[in-house]
Length: 153
Image (cartoon, rainbow, N blue to C red):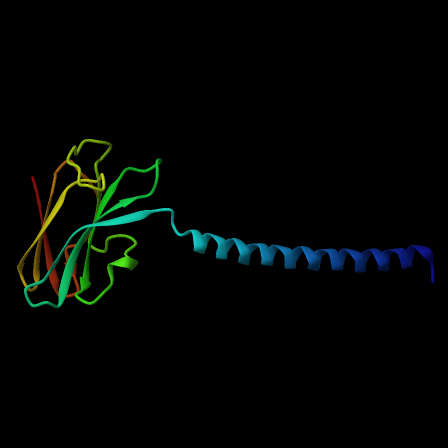
């Protein structure tokens, strides 16, 4: 066999092995970083500010402050959960998310975000009150069979 053809065959096999090794390393690195960041979490912390059960004891409204670090504004989130759901697994609010709109809403709860007040008007009606200067990112009007009304002051 000619030296040139033999060299090309060895080179092709070597490059194939190197390519496979690189792919295995990339997949391994991707799995490791996914696991690592999963352990770290989102970098955000939540603090429950208030919680109250609906009159029929089926649901509860949970108001919580969320802090995601120095580069973001403090925010206030509101979630409606079934009465038995654990608040430890809250990530973001499922009905309301607001922040201070770069300080335009100067009200502050103990977690640093805008003040939000909730009140059940009946088993299927929830009233949420917050400052009109706050910026809302999410404002759901209905959650399951619950009507949600918003008042601003």
